[in-house]
Length: 330
Ligand code: FAQ
Figure 1: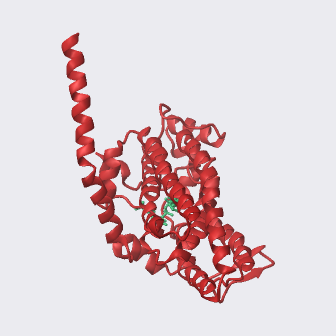
Figure 2: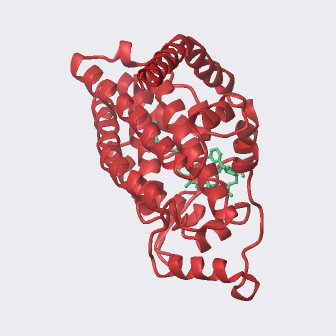
């Protein structure tokens, strides 16, 4: 059943004339910025799109712990270790709020987890890239959390109530994450020539994968038109990518680092930067499972699920025993 629930809708956007009375009433609510709540009537496609997007988002938060978790034991100071530990724990919390939001749509957490572990559901492409050294932890916080916030701030106004409320809390924490990453980059960029070189190398490797986080170009985006009509998405992928570039370029300049794009330049007429597109062939290849770390990431999640089996079994056995006792006492 969940396989159908998470499948992409892929349908065209209906005009008012093509809508049933229920669909038209629903669209009116969305247009008036009235939040949709779990018990409200909603089109099946709206439900499926939300399960897909919120589920993918939740999986990204959970898998997203792995690249940074890899550096907790090797953080250069006690203070950096404490900060990183708190950040990674925050990501776990974000995953849990988002799974809860998805559950309000009629899918269970177990179903979503199974879909992740069997490769039926995606998580963000960015987490299939490795964190090779400490500068990468700075780049992840600065660029990856920076891109995540750029996408998530507008999602606070998404039309589905539980998703919108989860995003409000998540955004507050993401801002701290971005700042801690930038702080690491600042230390490295102002450090020894060797450290500055590491910071530049991390920027070189994380720049284009970060641009990919916003999804394919608007021309290639399958879901944007319908998701924007339903106000699940507030901006298109290209709009957010542009805002991210415009925000990040001055930050790189302040660090004294160079964005690895020869075509990058301010365009006075459009009021934004011109920049090179990421390599979309690489993006779709990573989505197919062929990124540098896809296998490792999925294996780590499968192992965590299998290692936790005894805990789930224990909790279930305890709950069953308690329920049986209650029945016997009645
Ligand atoms: N990676 O038609 P569209 C974080 C797929 S933040 C993988 O444009 P849509 C925080 C897409 O699913 C990262 N797949 O799709 C953190 C669809 O495939 P499908 C997570 C991608 O949904 C920081 C197909 O391509 N944030 O984790 C990606 O309208 C640091 C066609 O694309 C969110 O999930 C991608 N980058 O727009 C944690 C935000 N892009 O499903 C730890 C919420 C696209 O038909 C450490 N999500 N695809 O098979 C969204 O805003 C949207 O889902 C987009 C994609 C914008 C990501």
